[in-house]
Amino acid sequence: MRRDGGGTRMSAPLRAMIVDDEPIARRGIQQLLARDAEVELVGEAGSGVEAVAEIRRLRPEILILDVQMPDLDGFGVLRELGSDPLPAVIFVTAFDQHAVRAFEVHALDYVLKPFDDARFESAVRRAKREAYRAREGDLVDRLASLLGRGAGGERRPYADRIVLRSGARVSFVDADEILFVRASGNYVEVRTRKHLHVLRETLAEMAVKLDPATFVRIHRSTIINAKAVQHAESVYRGEYVVTMQDGTKFPSSRSYREQLEKALRIG
Image 1 (cartoon, rainbow, N blue to C red):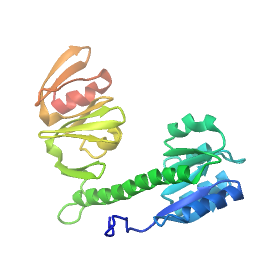
Image 2 (cartoon, one colour):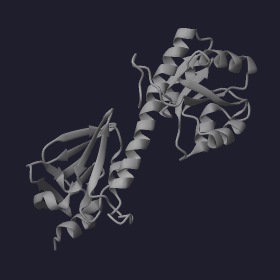
Image 3 (tube, rainbow, N blue to C red):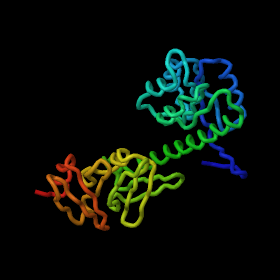
């Protein structure tokens, strides 16, 4: 991402959209956004139903979303979008009882009406940081896609190298170097033969990058490299304790017994 001499971001403005059933509220937000050169207002919607269609059409990167709307509220808008990629969401509302639910649906911030300029600008700053990270993530995904192609341009099912992104840092590791992947709260730990990488993503997101012929899920929180197993000990009715080459031990659960036994050629 380019910056000028003063450190200001010089990429295309971030696309923003306002959803609020009150025209006066929309105008106030318009005026605040107009002060920010890094943000471009690309659309508005005065109802939740209209918002769903416009979000899908315009693909905003920042969404300022009212909670209380007559036809479909802000939570309903996000529910209707389903698995669609979501922008950085700032909820605005006059009722603070929605705060907990807002963060449960992964809203980036929650602004109570009436809000002052400083509070709104603080929320937008957070949203911009998240949106820029998402843009950088798109670039990483494109690099990962290229790494997953053979010399002749044919698509391979699983890449020999894996892209690991943690904040602004991007690492490229050989898949064979990964010993295991373990869920840890809202993060995953990826242990290679030399390093530990902590990433803000889910175990499921990591699993789709890894060849299941080699990387086996043995527990709801653990994926191991079957080639890096030192030994496995049967402990109770189909459960195992697996010891990796670095000495780390993992219990396996019965629900993953078949995959583990097949990968380790047990029995």
